[in-house]
Image 1: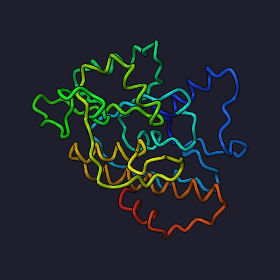
Image 2: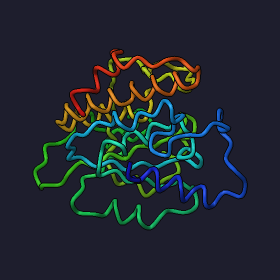
Image 3: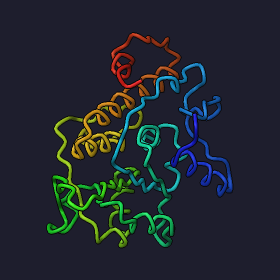
Image 4: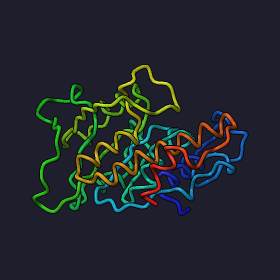
Length: 238
């Protein structure tokens, strides 16, 4: 499986580390393509769909190093995914260049209650100038994401897309105190739906579910059932 933006960011972050990053289960060998134990590898199930929208992932410190990170799943599916490490005092010039790229219409995806009312939108404006949506996602824990939103003044010129998801999160790889807090891949799927790309949204949801099933099966050493609902759901996108 070829590398993508999150994979490259992970490599950059590892190269800067002064000590090895230790995650739960890190003693186990992991597939470099899907980050699960090789005997539970799901690379062959990776969906293939055309996606017009772009995604910009701003990732908090070690987020790219975590095997359970779901921004990786977005980059698996959305070819035009960009990933940058977030720092409070420095901004990657490549990020600023991306935000100024005239082919994109950037928006920050974040709850509207944290933004000035005049910035908040709940639907995407129709594309009148040929620009493609660029969804800026803050990939972090909820506490970290709020800090990133407050302390990234270079994002203040963009509208804030406030999602109102009807479903509770299906993400089961990390604990959250609130069921309505969606993981990054779930947020991206909702964005693709709003952008008029329902097939891509469904594929990303299915990819998240399959990753979760393989990840947890590997963790608990359960036998995989390739006829499970998660495996069936991904088949139309292979």
